[in-house]
Length: 218
Image 1 (cartoon, one colour):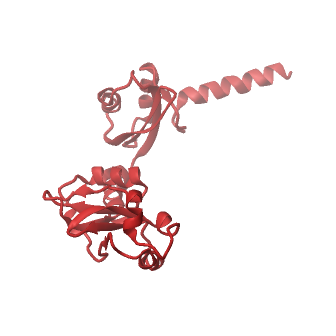
Image 2 (cartoon, rainbow, N blue to C red):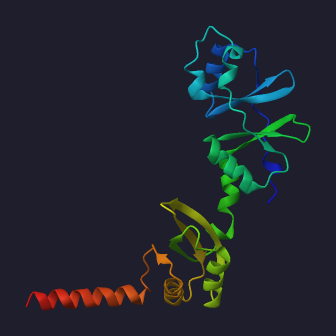
């Protein structure tokens, strides 16, 4: 996906010699979490809105240079790398540098998210299945093989959770063969976290449980 069409340059970086009062005023008029900062022609980081409002307004930004956050992406960065950078730095603005380390503009989080919204993972009709397995025991090749061996297309998969040496993978698949796919995952020692109406195994367990309750209450 081409991200170059989403480069914006309507917010000019502040110089490191700027007054804190001016930076606070700018944040009051913007919806961004950060504003880029330059020293001369060189990008040196971003000042966050949270920090700016904690600074003494009669001082200069240079007095707080230690608080700048030095995140950025390259002009030729992949959109997934850009999205990861947004998540890592909890920002809704991402400075862009060219190969000469010159600041050329920024990405806005909403624009990059729109690229994700247009992927088949989100806009193709299908079903979501979430499975869990030991962090050292799973492989995406195995996950894909399980889905595709049951005659269903896979639109995407990603690790959605890691906790206590276990990982959860969220998988977008076609609508067909859900019960067979669920049972195959279990045969490969995956725990199926998501609930599915087509899951005959769980239906059988529920029916047996209901019968046992009825028997014990006779």
